Length: 165
Image (tube, rainbow, N blue to C red; front, side, top):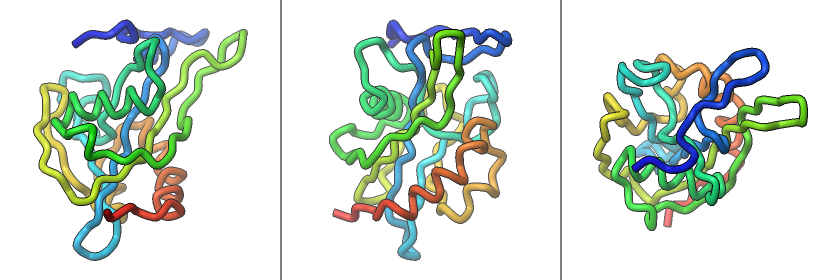
């Protein structure tokens, strides 16, 4: 379903960013059998922007949504996960495009937990969805935006205890 946030924002330098009101992605964590955390990653469909890379389920924010609401909605659309199973822990702006009047586009990563590695159903935007142990994330060809923020996000994933219940 298209929302009012779908569309490109073009910066002063000519770079294009998806989401008229910004964008958000869900860094969803679950326990891994080795007592560490695994995160749900999306292998982006070949036809999509930066297709063939791995990143977070997410997308454009609509005008009436918080970053948390947008990230959970987009993840639900792209993975089939039930929103009521997701516990949001924190949100962090991981990309920002400034214009003459200050910031006018942001990408917010929402860190959330589920009690177990839930089954997923990819939509057409995904070639694959996979629970990946945190230590193995960089073994994959990452979306450039996600790659640029992963070190910071990885630190946050270790600082914020994983909810198991």
